[in-house]
Length: 77
Image 1: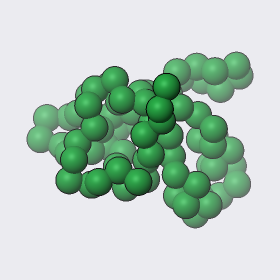
Image 2: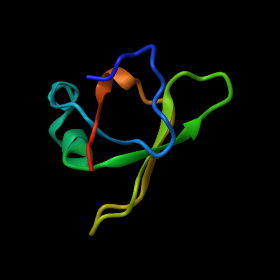
Image 3: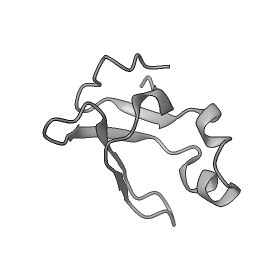
């Protein structure tokens, strides 16, 4: 798990933790499970990143704003 007081650098690859996905409905979790996103920046004054999940197969591009870092894990290359 990522420390919540340490912002993630732009370009960091992340995915949602299973512990977070397990709290979602099946449909919501299916939309996010297995997808790797990239931190693209932060809104002015925000400590939670903007995460972009690129289009993958039939899954459309998804951009999420102010995602809690407690719900993310860093993906190593």
